[in-house]
Structures are given as C-alpha cells and as structure tokens.
Amino acid sequence: MGTRVILTYRDYEALPADGRRYELHEGELSVTPAPGTQHQRVVGRLYRLLCQHAEAHRLGEVFVSPVDCILSDTTVVQPDIVYVESARSPLVSARGIEGPPTLVVEVLSPSTAQLDRGTKLQLYARYRVPYYWIVELEGQCIEAYALAEGTFKLAGRLDRGESGSLPPFPDLTTVATSLSP
Image 1 (tube, rainbow, N blue to C red):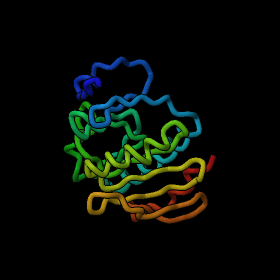
Image 2 (cartoon, rainbow, N blue to C red):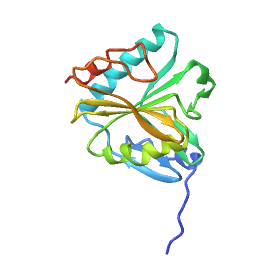
Image 3 (cartoon, rainbow, N blue to C red):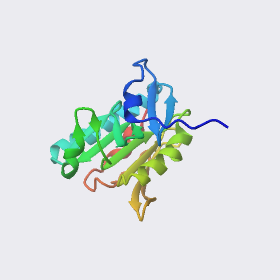
Image 4 (cartoon, helix red, strand yellow):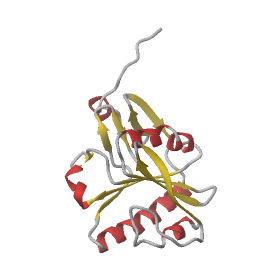
C-alpha cells in the first residue's frame, strides 16, 4: 500500500502552465479538460450580468475563471465565476481569493458535473462559502444553494425563461435569461 502524497499551494504554483485546469482538493490534484464553447458563452453572460449588477450597486467584485480561490494550503479551486462582497474584499490578493468568497458559480460540463455536484459542493460547504450556484446547461436551470448549519440547502431555482432573483442578489431578476443559446 502506497503513501498518499498531500500537495500544497507551493506544489500547485509549480505546476506547468500547459492549458489544463488544475485544482487541489484537500491535497489531491484534480485535472479537468478545458470547457466547451456553450459553457463559455453561459459563463460570459452570467459574468457580465453579475459584474454589471455588483458595480452598479457597489456590492463588491466579480471574477471569472481562471482565478484561484485559495481555501486552505491544500485546497485551491477555480470556480467559473466568483463574487466577493465588499465586506470580504480583504480576501482579494495578487494571487487570488484567499478564503471563502461570498458566491461561487459552477456551470456544469459533462466532464465536471459529478465533481461540481459532489466534491466541490462538499468543499465549498466545508470552507464556509455562503452561496453556491450550479448552472445546468442540459436542464437549462440555475440552482442556488445557501449554507445553513454547515451544509448547502436549495434556496432557489430558476428555469430558462423564468424571472426571479437568487441569493445573494435580491434585486437581480434577469438571471434566467443567461441560459439561452
């Protein structure tokens, strides 16, 4: 039986810039392929929507992947979109977001769906990320989860064509339109 090697942020920094998406999940390296074009279209639309809303209301900053969320020395993730409310702005550093952002958004791809709904959902809860959105391209919906007592609870869902708001943005009502092809 082999010894499990625990990788740290220092090991992560030394990885090659070869176009792959690397993350550390509790010291284990995770590598996923680059996302497809439909995934990137939806990420771009949601990023613009959230960024414009956050800037217009001076709520904080929105970042688009790749940006490192350094949740611990052995857990570094790159969510598709990251929102950091103004109260958490000290977490933003030159190397990334150093601690739990306010919201992480993952747009599901066939190669990442299980990871985003399983491992990453658990990691975001463990490191106390208050809000997590999962965007399903296949089902054309956005599920919004809020952290409650250490686990994520479904706080809202918008299907394509539906109008409504999702936490943490009570004044943003046009999110569901971002899923259109």
